[in-house]
Length: 571
Image (cartoon, rainbow, N blue to C red; front, side, top):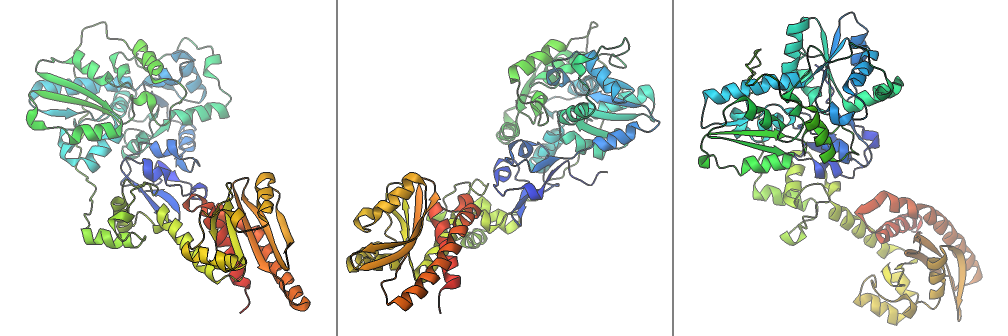
């Protein structure tokens, strides 16, 4: 069995944005040292995190080399081709795709839909033997995992049958011998784990994305090939089973396979929709049999995580429905091979934490009352309480809390700012103060210092009413050109400082010192100020970048200025 989970994180590429945590329907992701890692035993392999990761840090395991090694051996290797191939490779005919697969080294290509037809036949048989029962399709491995792990009360309702893929493998081995190799190709990542778990039936599972990559490496364009007479599906062409990849497709095959009197058929797609439907299902209200077709991907397998995304769902569905056909001879079909499989309970144990434990965890991130619980979702969890539980489980880190990190940066900046010997001010595009320190206020007299006492930091104050040289700030805002190491004369006083861009045309900072002193001391102060400002200007943007979205630009520049000054301030 392959020890690498079919989905994993490339840690060096993870940018700790927590989007995967936010989007994962079962929260099967933990954050360690700033990187989001999959929890294999919790993951249902829906592949949503792969789709949404902006940094492409979520990777799908590459099994191409394994398949190529299989093909280099002496055994014949057959492809089990998922029925969604019709919507995926719509620019080529089935015969051309078969020809392309044979160029890769496969001995034959068969439709997984043949296995789907056997699954429908077995479910129809179960229908005939029982009544007043809920039947949930076992066709989608992600849905089976979801129910077994997170909705275990419905595990016994899953039809105890192999999936269409594994049923198809049984058909192929019965037809061509147990020594053949079989590789599934389809839209689903979860099939990789299913293949790992059944090495006696199947050798590997590839996705459509894997196949496209392989074609690209070999410079094979299926649409450009001229198929040979024997380039057809073996051992036969599938019929109604080809409907399986669309929402409602399996239900349609069942209706054709069995009596529907006093029976109800429902189709749900998308994990959130399925979860909600099952959680709200009142079994006491049911009469007769209920069959639930559940597919993890919205719209069905045609929208699987490893499909081509540019085509509209309606067109994909049209392709599949147009391709599928009903048999010339009347169905129902008879179950032809044994495909029963026991599906055991394997629920995820969810620890329930006390209210006091949750409160203690929230205090770690500065949330001391319900007013502090913003439930903003920035950490990836729906509520602060859910985040606190994740902290207690070791799935989350304090640094994931946006408000906590912002407050931490603000408190650190403001604390150091108070001890800084020079005056610092940050302004916005409206020439209003974002932040300043007391030494900045002191530079301009007792009245301004009184304003600072009334409003520490002077946030929102108009710079023009405080600083006579406010025009220099406007110049930097308008032009983006920094004013570095400038003597500014105001009556009988001289200020030395710099005004520089933090965010172009939006946020500007200034650092100032009063050097109206005897010449020797003035020279020393100027040298000292130059060293500090030179060091600071190189750090401002770097710190602003590192803090990212977790703190405002003002906090970033304050932090950088303060640290550089505090390291160099005279004792």
